Image 1 (cartoon, helix red, strand yellow):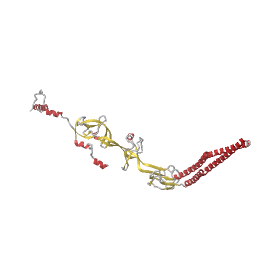
Image 2 (cartoon, one colour; image 1 turned 30 degrees about the vertical axis):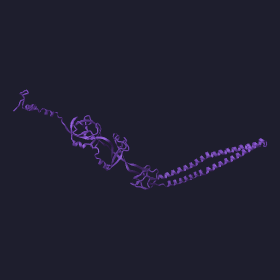
Image 3 (tube, helix red, strand yellow; image 1 turned 60 degrees about the vertical axis):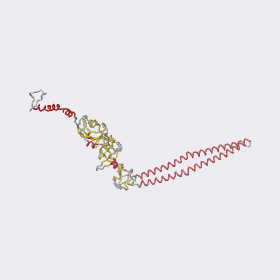
Image 4 (cartoon, one colour; image 1 turned 180 degrees about the horizontal axis):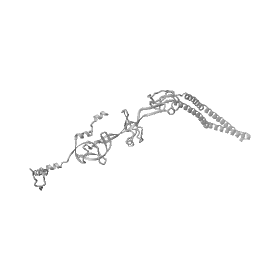
Length: 426
C-alpha cells in the first residue's frame, strides 16, 4: 500500500522509489508531533572523535653519528736511516722485537771512528791541562813580577825624593853647590819615570795581558773539545738506537750488508695507540670538534673507543678502514620519528594534542635522528604530546581520543623512578 503525503504537491510522474525515499519524512513528522525532535537534533550536533596514539616530547641526550672510511696510523713511527755509510756489524733485534726508547738496535763497522775519537780525546785532555796550568801558574807569576817592579820603582822614587829634599835644604842654607841640587833633581825625575813605567806595566798585565792569555788558553781548550765531540758524535752514529718505545716492524738487511743511502735500516712503531685519519666531506667535518668521542671499528669488527684530536677540511683519498665518530647533544628535545609529517611545501610538522583534546598541526624543525627518535630543534616544548599513530591525514584542530595504554608507553619516567637502577649502573 502506498501512502501519499498530503503536505506535498502530487505529481503524476512520482513512482514507488520516490515514495520510499520520502517515507522517513512522514515518520519524522510523526515523531515531531510526539516530541522526539530534540533527541534527533542532538545526534546531528555531535562531533566525530578520532582515536589516536600520542607520545610525550622528552629531553634526551642524542648522539650525532658520522661514519667515514679511515686509514689507521701508529701513535709514533720511526724509520731509522743511518747518518753514516758503513757495513752492519751486528743486529741486536729482529722483526717483532719490543724495544724501549734509547735501546741499542744495531752497530755499524766503526773501528776507524773509534780511533779518531780516541785521538781527539787525547788532544782535548792536553788542552784542558794547558788551560789549567796557564790559569794557575803563568798569569800569577807575571802579575807578581809586575807588582815587584812597581814596588822597587816606588822605593827608588821615595829615596830620590828624600835626597832632593835634603839637598834643597842645604842649598838654601848655602852649604851645597848648585850642581849637586840639580843632580838630585835629575835623579828624582828619573825615579818618578821608572815608577810610572812599572805601574803602567802592572795595569797592562792585570787588564790586557791577563784577558788575552785567558782567551788564548780558553780558545785552545774549546777547539780541542769541539774536535773531540765531533769525533765522538761520528762514533755514536755507528750505534743505531731507537728514538721511541715500540715494536720493530721492519729490518730488511742482514749483518755485513751496507744500507743504501737514504734507506731505513730499521723501522719501529708505537702501536700502544692508533690514529685514524678519515676522509670526511666538509659539511660533516663542520659537525665535529676536538674532544668528541668516537669508535674505531677495525676490519675484524673489533671496536676501540677514542676521541677527535684534529678537525680539518682536508680530504684523504687513501681511506681504507671504517671509523665512527660520535658527537653528544645534551638535553635534546626528541619525539618518535613516526610523529613527524612532511607537509606539501617540504617542511615538517607534528600533530600536538592540546588540553582541549584537539590535534593542532604545528610546524617543527628537525635535527639529529637516532634510531626511531628524532631531535626537534624548533616548534615544541618539553612534555607536550604529539600524535604517533593516526596523525597522517588528520585534520587540523580535530577532536581526538587518546588511547591511554599507548600514551603510557611513551610517558617519561616520573621523578625518582629508576633510582635503584641508576645506583646499580654507578
